[in-house]
Image 1 (cartoon, rainbow, N blue to C red):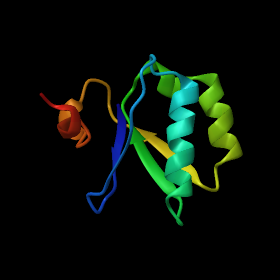
Image 2: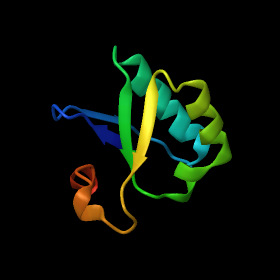
Image 3: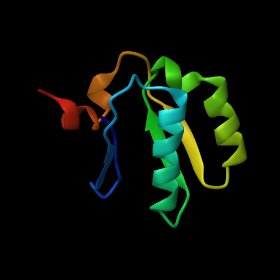
Length: 87
């Protein structure tokens, strides 16, 4: 599952069966863009796919709609999205 939480506490998520890839992340980001009428500011951890060239291209092409920021490495305590997948 990939998920995001808005600053109002609304959760967005998408289930997938495969390994997380840049294309899946882009698909999720496209959904976030479509579901919002304002620019999306998305905070990511440092998963390898978050730094892919394919994602960089997507972000440049969609800079008017989405911007990403990164959490410091190894800081799950700063990521409220971790509570959605906590066991």
